[in-house]
Length: 143
Ligand code: DQA
Image (cartoon, rainbow, N blue to C red; front, side, top):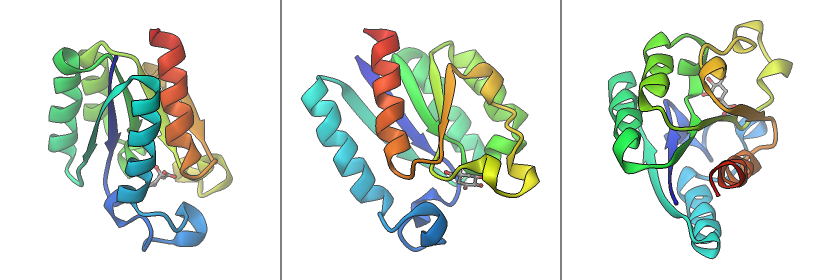
């Protein structure tokens, strides 16, 4: 089983960026933990991060041929990128939307996701655990 873990804009700043909201862990340390989890579970995982919408779209497209599923934190693009939504649809692979913070407890503009309707499900509000939970959810769906 092959899974892509994809992070969008500003998530390369984890650890430095608003740690009271997003936690103190860096993206590299989160990915190292996920890498260990996936190796224990026999999952082949690849990690991507980009601040560019177009690059994220290319990565999601490549999942069509190269992955069985996607765990995606699209960052702020979640709230307005129809192009990323269309890329998820085009990939035709199950996608789990994740957010470190509980977006529903925050500003109103974060309450709306334009990608949820093309994702299998949404996990938010549990800090870095959302990535692990997203992988477990995909695993249950795909196995
Ligand atoms: C986020 C929530 C988004 O609203 C925000 O723009 C992010 C991170 C999260 O992980 O909580 O960049 O996706």
